[in-house]
Amino acid sequence: MEEIRRLADRFELIEPVGGGSMGTVWRARDENLERTVAIKELLLPHGAGEQKADEAKNRALREARIAARLVHPHAITVFGVIDEQDRPWIIMEYLPSTSLADKLREGPMEVDDVIRLGIQLCSALAAAHRAGIVHRDIKPGNVLLGEDDTVKITDFGISRAMGDVQLTATGEISGTPAFLAPEVARGEDATSASDVFSLGATLYTALEGGTPYGTAENPIALLYRASSGEITPPVRSGILTPLLNRLLDVRPDSRPTMAETERELRALAAGEPTTLVAEEPPPKARKGMLVGVIAVFLVLAAAAAAAVVVVLNRDEETPSGQAPPPVSQSQSAVPTSSEPVAPPPSPTSAPPSTPPSSSSSSAPPPAQTPGQALAAYYALIPGNLEAGFATLTDNFKQNRNQSFERYSNYWKQFTAVTVSNVTESGNTVTATLTYVRASGGSTTGRETFVLVQQGGRYLIDSQRAG
Image 1 (tube, rainbow, N blue to C red):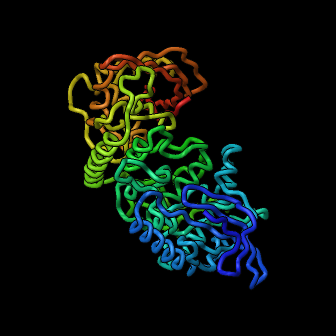
Image 2: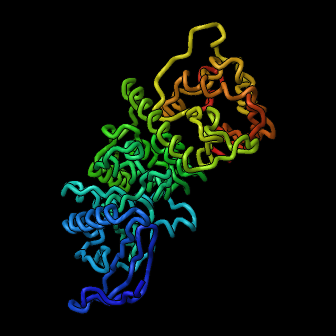
Image 3: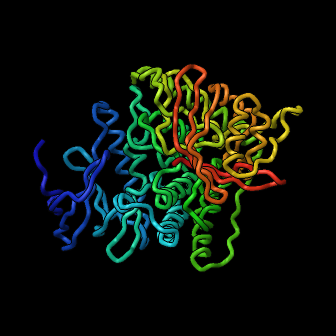
């Protein structure tokens, strides 16, 4: 392909300053206005055929023109769009900056810094929503940090225009589902509410050092996890935790608006009272969500079976869902075959259920220390699941939207769990857990729990990997 150094007889391409799956970003010179600009060269879908390529190009042009309606101090301004060499080029404001994704390679941010960053992002996104513009691809890579601490968001609508984060006919996935709202991962149209979720996922990542869905070598497994809305509860978010939980609510209509989110962040920054609290999902919402998750997983499993060779019977592989209370969603959680697998133990879509009434459901006898209580809990598994379920606090169940039905179905995969190398620090317990599979083999990992005393006994209130 002939190298392009000049566009529309006006823009001189100086050097590439960024890029990704959708194209290359150039620093360029607008000779008419004598100013530096950024120009994004969009790559059309490879091998999609002429018709599909034309459709993607037309969408990109349309979305860029829509994005140009937004002018805000915390959004990269789109100046125009041109069609040259049979592909779109978006002319944008140039900001000497680094992306939030690059910054986070140095490690997580402090809560106060994330609050300040979130305020700036929310102000731009709230203005976009008022103008009828949905971003559709909020993630750390699209958040730019200027040299004067200015925060700006870029790439409005471009991911949708280019067909990003779509499952293709061959089962391949373009882009990452790590910041997708559950409804978008299931194939629904993006809305302002899904932008709110993606913002929450971005702030979560800045604080926690990993995405809410964790990681998976198999992108289909990660897309499934996104479609379920199953997240790892935040542990480093401090005063931001209640708001993050609302932003990451599996139900779009239960998330705050972007304007409400901005007000909450400003209140937190000023040390003022906030108003948003977590809500308990209604039974009907949970049941409907489960149906959607099962449907999308069956579709993804079928696509994966046609496109991916999956290694079977890997004894040392991480289980497809960590045992309750373990979540360890940040670890690889890849299905061990192309067949549908049992859903993870604590997705937000799990239907409510209560354990059957029986004498076996009584709580275990009180333990003298948190470590002893943890060992006693796993001694119940899987023989006395009613008592095991009673050892989880209401807060734990609410945060995971856990149900006894889901809990008991999950534990059918295992015959035992052994606990070793237990260390205690106050009510925090770290232990090595070995899960013995009913199908053979085992998985071992180090996990940390927080236990609380209620009614004279220790209950498990939270868990994380490591």
